[in-house]
Length: 67
Image (tube, rainbow, N blue to C red; front, side):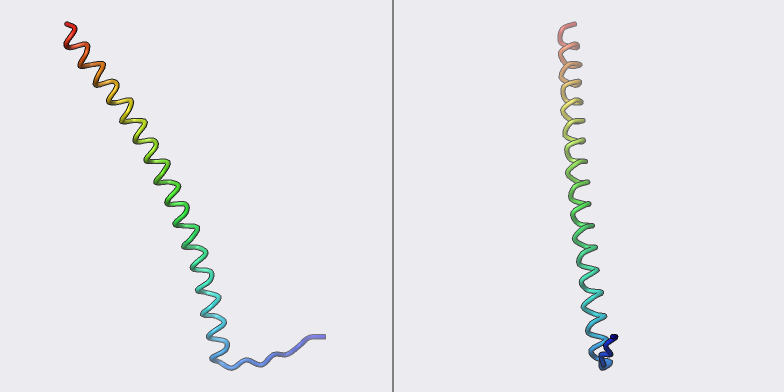
């Protein structure tokens, strides 16, 4: 059997406000986590590139001095 629940307008506003707030917090948390992961990946990639570049530049400097 269905149950009928009466809500005041303010009760309905409160329920909607809390639901929207909860959803926005979940989305924000996921978005922040994904952004953090991407920044960590980019940092590792950049560090690897800089290590390769610095090794290449050291190798080029050594070649110049050897001539």
